[in-house]
Amino acid sequence: MAGVPSFGWESDLAAALGLTGSELRFTISFFLSVVASWLWRFVPTTKGRHLYAIVTGFCLIFYPFGYGCFHALVPSTLTYVMMGCLRPQAASLAWIINFTYLIGCHVASASGTAWKEGHMDFTGAQMVLTLKMISAAVCYQDGLKNAEVLRPYQESRKLVSMPSPLEWLSYIFASGNLLAGPFFELRDYRDYIERQGPWANGFPSGVVPGLVRLFKAMVCMAFHLRMTQGFNASTLESAWYHSQPLLSRVIVLYLVPTVYRFKYYFAWAVAESGLTLSGFNYNGKDKRGVLLWDRYVNARIRHVECQTSLAKLPEHWNVCTGLFLRQYVYERLTPKGKGPSFFTLIVTQLVSGIWHGLFPGYVLFFVSSALMFQSSKVIYRYERNWPLKLQRFPPWVLAKWAYTAFTLNYCASAFMILTFKESLTVWRSISFLGHFVMLSLILVSLVLPPKTRARSLIAIKEQ
Image (cartoon, rainbow, N blue to C red):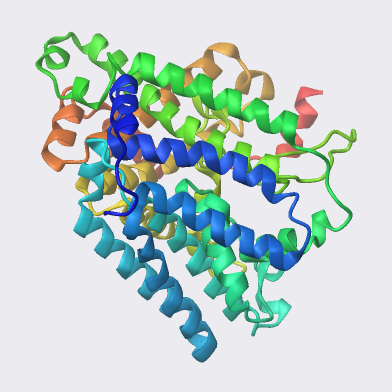
């Protein structure tokens, strides 16, 4: 949407970098948010920090998105009024208000197709805002409940008092947080602004770890820009890809989503750099006294790309969104004292798919990811009864990595391609091998369920 007028130098720079105009503006705002976050830590008063977060946050999203940034005020205002008037129903109403508005934004902007073509709009920021609004409303409703009925995480994040309008706007804009996240809780944000909790006694400088993360971001972007020239979503739809032998198609299907992920590693590393420089990412010290800057780590590259368990991927990929899904969907659909069901997993993944956008590729990926996680749990249930030496046997570990990497990238191709027919065409190009293996593992576990053996007996035999 219109806002800040275009400048000649923007067109020249965008052409030189191979970016669209909206991508260039987003990138400039993104890097400026790192500087704004570093200066944030030096604002002396609580009120000053709130005002600084609002002003800088608004300016940073107005430059790339123009008047589209005012979308933020519609669901956030409705949510705030609803929290004040209908606190016992705050959670359900927040889900209805914010998800309905987000879906409307996805449809109106055709977000998936627009992003694929390099056009940036406020819908991505609206996705981050949706998580923040829902979590705040749910936590405010949790403030009415006794500790006995809440899980430990819910008890630690519940809101007893209504945030002031200043706090609310500050939490919304948060000095550029809407650009790429990550999601964080209002309770944590309030503690940081008021210098309470982990920040009560001050916190060390985050300049060195912040710059290290910024350097990591630049390496990730350089890798992505270099490799994406030959391995991108269009590659999987090309005649060249479909003319290759099966093994070559499998290798290309592994490489394309891997290269694609580095774009997200770049964005999240920049966001993490800003949080670290501001001090918000400070997480105390470990047992050895080493400073921790991992409160809001959104991705751990090595643990994703070298992972041997699909079920553990959410712990290392899009971590903060995964935290929201676990705490506000998965856990709340699971009765206290009981274990989660496969239905709970399916619903959680569907919520994630709809949150990303109403494109068939998203739904295909997130429904398939439920099978990914379930098949991984099957492997774990079988191997946990094996001797530790066998579990750690290098060829077996390598086989688990190969299965994890192949299955993840096979399913992720739909996330990239988005359209239903083309996604199925890519999967068909290797005979739906990923789904065949996942379903086979699950069906085998139903026919031949893994035996349960006491872990202590295994340990005794291995001594």
